[in-house]
Length: 586
Image (cartoon, rainbow, N blue to C red; front, side, top):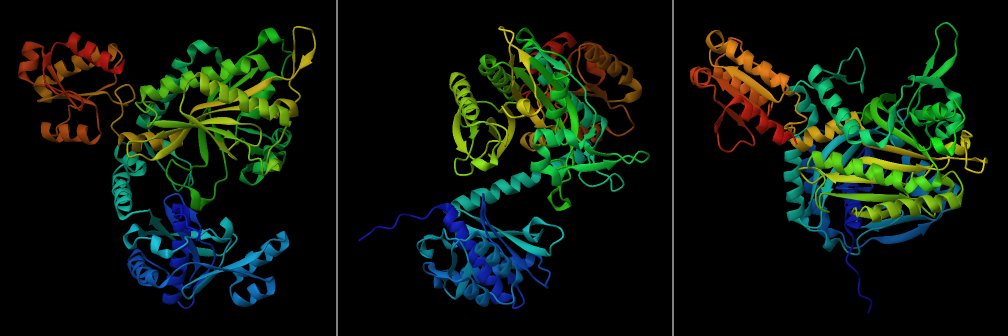
């Protein structure tokens, strides 16, 4: 007798999506079901409903799912002809559309049944519903979603569910979500006065306050400082371009729908807002003849790009329409590629170590993102070049002894890459830095250099981003640190509070001046609020250190730093305080 293997978590989640759809149909007679896949933390199902659901309805639907669960056994597969499928789903235009597409592709049409419910599906279910624990899943939230992601299509109700192998794992995830809510960068960004949005400016277009702008500048400066010895040169490019640039690069064909288009008011010429910087950088390279002696050439800049994201997909700083990239591109010979990739890895390691995010192998991993051999049509360029580029990335990752694994299908259309995945403070995986080898764009733009034999060759292009999108990076580190930034990154590092502004204010200002001269970012709160209120304000703004100035401080010139990492509140003179703070930053 053949022994059944335990079902995977993805199969459990997929099966629960069917259970959700069945519960919906039993509770809402006018519902039309569409699609319901498994996702990273559970599942969802999109339903067309004339009724508006609220969060309180989730409990009712959850109870119906729990009631149905013991009545279901395994899923029974049945292959049917297109007309039989259409007849079964008569009156449901969404399923009819899917059936027509499957028929056009020449694929089998399969229906799967469990209990009294039948759905159009490709398969991938549990072998027995008894494998799913009653308390291992929970309906989580309701959202809106356009059919097939197109805003011209009907709006559907999307019901999300969480699902894990055990009730304990579900409980752990729910605890993590509670912590994530406390750390939500949208809430903290407002409380810490870092950024804002305006209806007059438009959705997905964040405005950064002085504190938020300083935070961005500190990040860029840190990256530039780390890579200062590697020969990167700053460049600057316009924010708009003719469409020809992206048609030549190949981006127009791949991402044309995401481009923001601009028409000249007087000339009527059509331009697009740049969605990436690499094609522009190729034109700086192409502006003059290059020799092998000139290479490698390394360009970098921190600049904004624009993408026409759908309004429903915008989310705080995590998904925006104006994206600031800390972008860099290297043009080099084939012999130089390996070292250049290793240089980028060095910068990534040092930067994320400074943030406390690069530690042992449990704090990060690196995806060696290569082609999907089953879909070669998705990728541009010569097969031999692809093989060589993938080998170089693997060699670089091996030599640098980083925690990596190969992932098929995650390469860009122009080349393979190393994607650095970090785990934040509550163990969420975040994709941040990347280094990519591009063998396509230099060919498409006809880039050349003269080799030692006087012959023309095509350079290799390397794309690198350390923080990636500054907006998304800020969203991640705000949540990672819950607003308690490392001392080197805090917009204000020390707040000085005179007990009595009239009596101790001048002395407080003198301390602030000395600390500022030593390179620290200092704020003095000497308004008429009580000392207790000013201390509370400083703590709410998550300032790393507070220095209170009263009679004894004025007389003795000895001070106590009160802060998150100061266990013993020892009094020090100003020179000792400065040394103490510098040591922490270093």
